[in-house]
Length: 326
Ligand code: ADP
Image 1 (tube, rainbow, N blue to C red):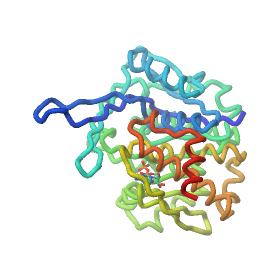
Image 2 (spheres, helix red, strand yellow):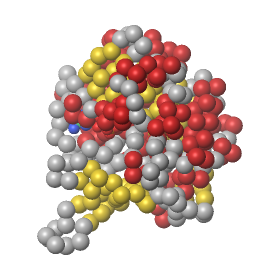
Image 3 (tube, rainbow, N blue to C red):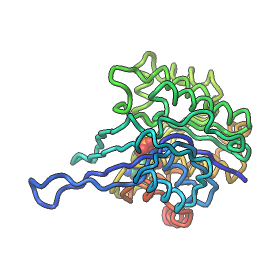
Image 4 (tube, rainbow, N blue to C red):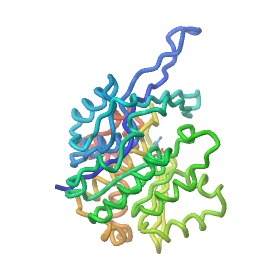
């Protein structure tokens, strides 16, 4: 089975809504989310086999996450549970210009308590890809587990994918995330950054070329830098290019990057592209552009819907969208 393993946090995103009456208290609506959990749901909605690996709390929201992952068709057989900490909560408010601000209730949180012993031997056996993000790098122990997961996936010949997905508010105050980010970036075959995240890496010293030179020192074969409605740029070791975004009217930009990477991982898995074949695929103009267009359609559709899990499109929706936008 071509399983896409998605490792890290599942949490509840509370989305702020404008109160019905001026002066009334703000209203926050709970949505199941967490970047790697979103990606697992995204792959499953597209018809792929996705497994979520992480620690869920034995609390109301842990149950909700487990139920919703299963309802979306995600394999939860590698999920561990704990009573030692509650589910992490993220409150997301939208400014008038659509920009998001976050307030996190983590740590303590269940997802930070996943340890290497919770990876069972069978976890990596059927994996074609292992996907992680930076929210599981915010504490030393979970960062170590994330990197170990990436290494175990590589040893099992799975493609290792990393979406930086930086949420500065999740890091201990005063701690520079850069060293931990580079530990994970140095393990990935497929790297997804946003334009802001590329700028963040540049701010630590050096220009764009220096960041790319450092990425190419690792196993990276394909780097995608996304820029919301402005589309994306892609890079291989010998080539680079861009792809515009589809024109849609955005309702909620949460989850666009997760839907995008889910689309890309789904297509790579479906085509049986592992770490060894990624460079060849990325340099094949027709196949690469076709996969990126599919992934961009997933991202575009995600912004037309509110929520995180709920915003991940189905394969039929993506195909219909691509036909409309042919
Ligand atoms: P992230 O959520 O990681 O910051 P982006 O917002 O850059 O990711 O979105 C990833 C991809 O999803 C973009 O490259 C684009 O193809 C698509 N996308 C995101 N926002 C929009 C939008 N407003 N309109 C159309 N497509 C979008």
